[in-house]
Length: 309
Image (tube, rainbow, N blue to C red; front, side):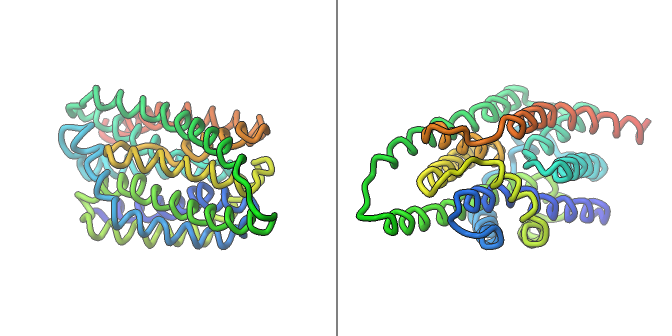
């Protein structure tokens, strides 16, 4: 077992928790249902449950389906190092990073340099799933928002309580999907070197700790970047995002919870007749998400060449 890989993985997972807490806590707090700190607690419980129950479905997403073979310890160190660097950049910019794209891109770059056989049909399937994720979440959220806005309640208090419970539940569901998909992917990539059970335990503890200690900062960016969603729109946005990621998890497809959440927020906002995200914030997200996989691939390739010669 590589000590360097263990350190890099632990640090990356801490930043993952800090960065991705926004996907759960940011939406629930942005809709004014609960506080950011309570949202982070829901996030921690959700990722632990999702990782334990369904994380195994993504264990072979990279090494097994995309790559015909296993990356060596040195290549894994570069893959995690590049992903970690991208996470640092995104967290510094206070933006939620699609870690799936960074990890997947760096894995492809390493495999290409090492001459490892790659299933390009699977690669294109993954790329198409990345495109489908925010679009699907946006469409579902739009329909769900339109539908829920027609529901009638006895009074304002009943409305707030009902949607408050639903939004907290879907906040948990979002974190659950993150654990099942993203953490499952990470465990699958490094678990062969560090041990799957050990990596699973490490993933839960480190991600939870990162979310608890540092997650509120990024969560506020997402929450404050939204328009006033309101309970009904907050529920529709988050449920659609979690549902899409969970469905792709059943196919063993690594997708980004960040993509899905932002798509859900956009669809919920459109269903309500408002712009759910500021144009400047959305533009930065699109640029970041477009560059991440390609940049990660190139960086992994360059680092292999620079070190191995």
